[in-house]
Image 1: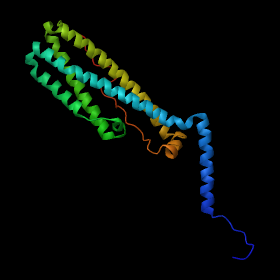
Image 2 (image 1 turned 90 degrees about the horizontal axis):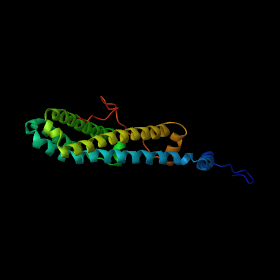
Image 3 (image 1 turned 120 degrees about the vertical axis):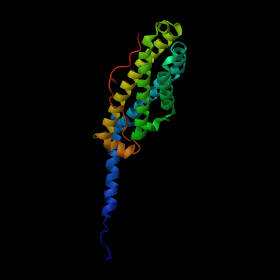
Image 4 (image 1 turned 45 degrees about the vertical axis):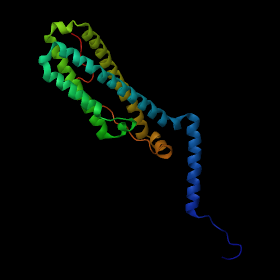
Length: 209
């Protein structure tokens, strides 16, 4: 190289340095306005809502054995209906779910389908109770009926809250600038699954007699 010749910076190195400065400036700006924390905040809210959905479905599952035994004492001839509820409950509780389920379409669908089948089986059981006046006036059954009604309402609320939380989170990670922020700072952030509409899903099953 001739003496005194200028040493020019490598264009690729210059490009990386410039990109780093731009990213740093953007991160500082976003941190100041709170935007950089929006993705993890919405993600945690959605996960919290998912936990509540699981809790309420588990609460319903815990009520079913006593309900089945109580009905069995008055309506043994409803064997097929009782077996259907018991089997649907076993299937619903055998589906393993965790925080990762919301990012797995197949596992989420399996969970939703199992819970929908249990809802249907419970509905058939409660319809069959109409034929047994003594059962309908049994104090234990009335208490279980009240608890089940409250649980179905809480399930409906938990699902609604989860759907809203996931909608907010998914919108954030799919639109700008949230999509950029997620790509740069939270590459593990993925869109979440949500419940699909089923017949009469906008209202909980009726358990009143």
